[in-house]
Length: 343
Ligand SMILES: NC(=O)C1=CN([C@@H]2O[C@H](COP(=O)(O)OP(=O)(O)OC[C@H]3O[C@@H](n4cnc5c(N)ncnc54)[C@H](OP(=O)(O)O)[C@@H]3O)[C@@H](O)[C@H]2O)C=CC1
Ligand SMILES: O=C(CO)COP(=O)(O)O
Image (cartoon, rainbow, N blue to C red; front, side, top):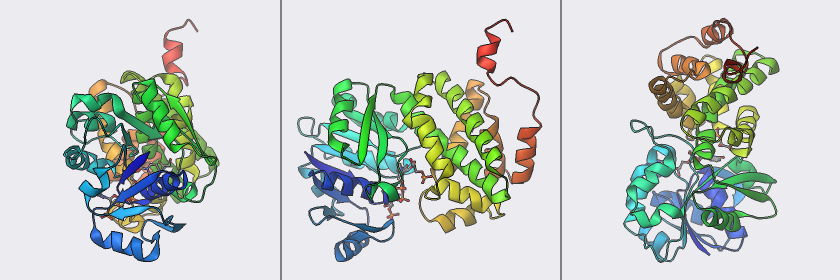
């Protein structure tokens, strides 16, 4: 299968390298010609994925039409805020008979519309492409995928054959792909865990310990599942790779851009300073704002997300945020379950 990978950041590059090693004919598109020239010169994406060689057969271009001209699968690897403008441009070159798979790999929610990214993509494409949209998510840092470190992820699509086509495309000895019909859950798990990763980073930056991290991850998963279920996700999905799996990797890895940004904030840096230092996209920041509004609109309790919002956008002291979480009104761990039982 011929593949166009749209975007040339760390994740797009790792996936282009993976697909290329899988024997696919891959063309990777970057929006800047200068970046293409750098990658052609060094056969490496030094800005976003240093130390990973680009296979000689991987084609590189800044010409979007050329990238899509003979592709059958399109893999979108741009950040969430760029998904709508990018798919709009891509749409102009798509042909229903030729382009059989549209894979989104970004993790986030659209500001303003509250849409999941597969919904954003669907809204910009003719109906004939609806069944071809797949979401690839799960615990998968580009730095490790680029080095063929064993990784397992999920491909979710409304139609089983579509998810299986993505599974066939990406599967390799070091990259195991499971299918899942729960597009809502897989997408929300991937987007919302970034907020919690920022929080565990803040906790580490403040000098708190493993107990704090475990508490944030567990209670974070509870609020992810609460919002997710209210939006139609299957609760079990949050126990899978796109839920707890991705939460674990992002909250504990030093590869995580979200966790690293959180550490800097916990150490006293302002949000803008932390983002400037990380250089790559820190999706949890935008997602925090969107998720907080969404939760408020739906009447869903997300106390960790609320405190993250206060720290990131309202100038709250991170230490006070932790204190407010610790001293909230008393509650039960499984409130949804207990409310429906005599106990
Ligand atoms: N990195 C990872 O390990 C993983 C990331 N993801 C997800 O993948 C998505 C991309 O993340 P990641 O690769 O880390 O990001 P990076 O910060 O590494 O790269 C961002 C890339 O997107 C490009 N870009 C930025 N804005 C636009 C735009 N408006 N139009 C087109 N291209 C644009 C940048 O180009 P330029 O250099 O010109 O600014 C750059 O090539 C995120 O949603 C992330 O959550 C998912 C799994 C793993
Ligand atoms: O989603 C990811 C790993 O699965 C990447 O997380 P970061 O953006 O925090 O690096």
